[in-house]
Image: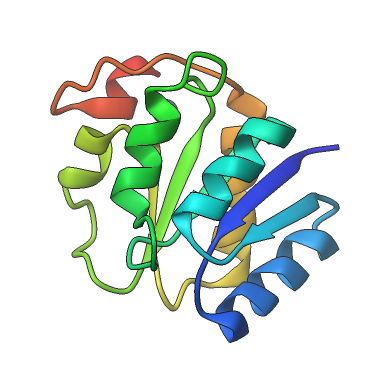
Length: 136
Ligand SMILES: [Zn+2]
């Protein structure tokens, strides 16, 4: 079973995401900020991380950096979910994330993207401008 860790500070959105991915057959963990998400990631080693960007304590960018800098977590696939970036924003792959989902995102796209990342599994990142796609 795929374990998905969701970092999302808005309760309503977190609840919806939890429901969508639980229905898709995944084990879902949730943290309300980046710092809590990082602690959960260290403790539980999820298969995929889905993170919001704007969050208290530690934002999504800092969370991605912390995960990519952690010896045991660095190869976890990461998807970003936000309403505040244009499609295909180059900062996302540059930061070391693998996919960008824009709010509001259709449930089928959410599930398909996370399933793809789970199927691909852990993989390395070189932090080049081409980012994750370069590693496919
Ligand atoms: Zn990747």
